Image 1: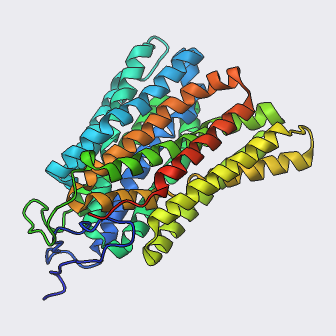
Image 2 (image 1 turned 135 degrees about the vertical axis):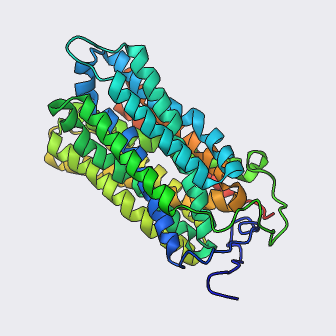
Image 3 (image 1 turned 45 degrees about the horizontal axis):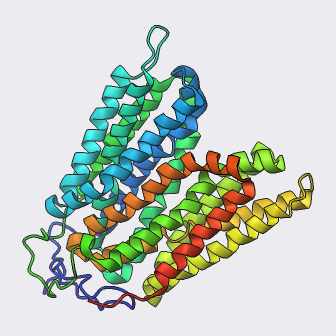
Length: 434
């Protein structure tokens, strides 16, 4: 058999479905063996591009509130619509990916996003004589979320097609580093652009970035062999993703684990400032530590679980450690001694550790979900998981102010502890193999 044409048959790791590689993956001769890393690069770029939009636009909140004449509730509605759009569209995009293929869906999603950002540049930029309405702005960001929901399932399915079972956790984890990477770039660039040059520059930069991702997707993202035309290596005996209890259990656990993660990302700045009087420099250092730590841990955990074939055990460990970390944070807040330097350091360190613990499992979880579904159905399974993830991104920022008013900061972190500990038993019971 030539090196260009190979059939991948990998043994199913413990805790994974045996139909993970039920389709032949024959690489066309025009692609070298290392082409899979270009495919991974496309997946990273696409996710970083949308993360730059999703996490970067909220960082322009002060300028957005001033330029669009928004109240705080208006601002919450507008930014919430971005997450709502992703939550609504993830599963449909995943189903389309399994039907149309990852290349078509990712090109359609990114290309449409370029067009829509161009329309926003033409119609949505405020000026001295024109201020778009709140509903018009919210509707546009809702559409951005709907289109951006295409990147997760399609890029994940491409990785399933190009990487073997022994590399998928590592590859998926690398892809997941794109989320904090893109969010960090957006937070670094977009606020200064909005304040210095206005939102025309913001939308133009995002459109150019999406256009570049679209080009490289067209250039590099090709399926090794059409899954619909391939002959099955193993019989497909597992249920469809939306009918699989195993996939639903894992997706629900993933969604619940994202609640405390979103709480860290959205509440840390206000919490450290209002509760402990900690300044901007130390707060920024804490958030940067969480993001960098999450990136490092995602890559390490992907490689480690590939070698040891223990993804499910690692996910259970992360849930348990996160629960313990948030419980420690809750206790520390309850026994607070504001004004003490030692307390401030302990608070930041504990918060950073909790944030890293609850953010280090994403690549492993997505690799396990995709493996349970099988290569030909990965888009649907990943779409389901990310739908539940973005429900958290929509609900948590809306819920925190009300929970804070009803309880206190202790109540916020107690709820985060509860979420992590609720996810642990969901992951505890090993799923039967197909």
